[in-house]
Length: 261
Figure (cartoon, helix red, strand yellow):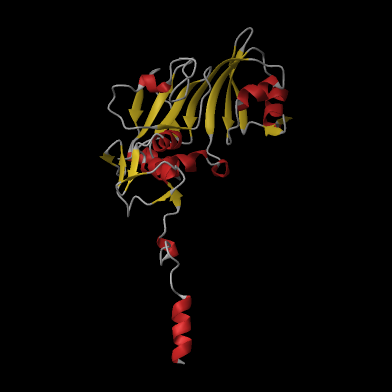
C-alpha cells in the first residue's frame, strides 16, 4: 500500500514550468487583458505589446497572446502600473461626415476629435455608424457591457429616422419588414412606418433588432430607393433626445443598467 501511495503521489506531481492549479492559470492573452481593464482597445494593446511598451512582473513581453492575469501579476504600460480603469459610459450625437474610428488613414475627422481635451479615458464605440449616418452613438471602456449590447442574440432595438428619395406606400413598408436576401445576408426591418411625406421624398421610422453592415441602406437599395439622411434616434430604451450635434453626455447608472437588461 505504501508503494501504491508513492506512485499515486508521483502521478500528481506538477510538470516543470506548469502551475499546480490549472484553474488558477491565466486564461487570456496580454492584449485582451489590457482591453478588458479598459485602458485601451485590443488593437492598441497589441501594438503597445509588440513595441515593447508593456512589462509583466518586471519583464518586457512582446507577444500579445501570452497569457497574463492582472489580479496576480504586476503589469506596466509605458512604465505606469495598469489597474482597472473607472468605467465610463457616454452618449454622443455623431454628426454626418464624421468617421467612427480612433484614427483614419485618409486624415478625416473622427468621433475622437469631438472628445479631445475632455479628460476622458480611452473609450471604444459600442457598435458603429457609417460616415454618412448621424445620431446616437455609445462609447465606453466597459468591454463586457459593450459586448452584451452588440451581441446579435440580444436583439437590442435600434431606431432610425430615414429620409428617402421616394414616396412609400403600405406595400413597400410591408416588403421592408418581410426583408430581402442580399449577398447571402437576410436584411429586414423589425418595423417600418411612415413619419411624414413631402412632394418628392418622405421620412420613415425604421427599427432594427440586429445590425448588419449598412443594413438600412442596402435594404432600401434592394427596392431602388436611395437614402438622403439616416439618423439613429434611439438604442433600446435610450433616446437621442435633445443632445446637440457633436455633443456628448455621461449616461446615468439607471440608463446603463436599463441597456444591460
